[in-house]
Image (cartoon, rainbow over all chains, first blue to last red; front, side, top):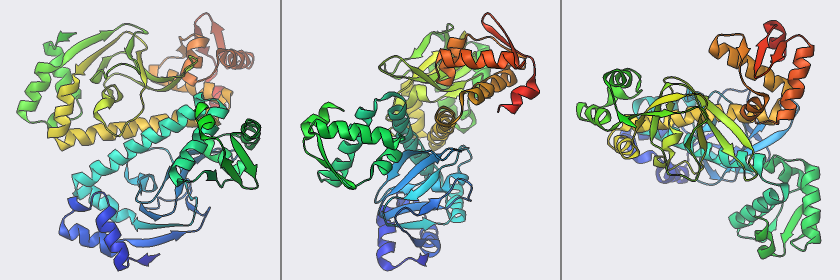
Length: 226
Length: 226
């Protein structure tokens, strides 16, 4: 955790969604009290039994939010990318939120951390910041509903096709570098189910499988499963 | 749909959560343009393919919100009672919400309906109303996360115990007048599972079963399943 460097200050000024709504004094506080934080791939950013982390603005990398059951099952709720703000990492300042989640770095991740006390004070002093925080929570609500519908209603082959489609669309490549175990976690499914469906996709010529990597061979056919 | 009577105007003034934040002109508009609506037991208030209903404030009765899958399965997300505000019935004014739900009257229900245009205008004119709407959505987010955790993680006997416990706590009685089919819908489970667990609870002396009614015999024992 280090003070902001010049490039990071510019990033905050440009990417913090409520920057322009702050007074000059509030802006100075954000610069003075925020810090740059780094998380290694797979490092936990927040556990459900820990105190809130503070408000995170992703600078580089990828974060996922998931639920963990008592018997150790994980269900991914949504993922955040560059320039996304992670409001649930500061959910303890939103009285309306009575649940808790796990937050993990998917890849090596850099973020700007606004400490909890500062974010809380900004929300109290500035209605625009409070409105932003609740709008952001509402957007995450929408993401979670999407995940929930996937988990509850879609067949496994359809869910996996959606995952592969979204993933390659995001990265702009034709391959996905995840293990079956990782995909199962993202989908809220079991590794066995993912392996079975991938084998079926491979037999159908939709994908080619190699260790830790899935190559999409036929996008049109993949699309037919969506 | 009828204009507000004097008793309903008093109800709005007392129970509309953002009433005191409105200007006198806005208050006058709420009274002039809102209406009293009635729904019969099991009547649909909103279907996911329909236009938004508007902002509902429950005066009497009970509303439930659920998801419907393509093959007809229902999963209840949360229920609303007297004095609760149903913000998802006006979700089309919240840009952040990209999902849609079904909304149904569980019992005969009376509500005050603020038409969509009015609610939208109040949100635009008055930051407090916008903040209220997003806070409310965040609260529903919390409810849905609770349902989701129940569905994903709890064993069926635990879920049914939670349902019976909550239900009797809400109504202040020791019996629950729902069919197994209805309970299965609320729990996002199958009727067979509910019937099996209820039979087990009856054998354990926790409940007594009769047609369309479940009597709680042993609250302490029920608690042990929570």
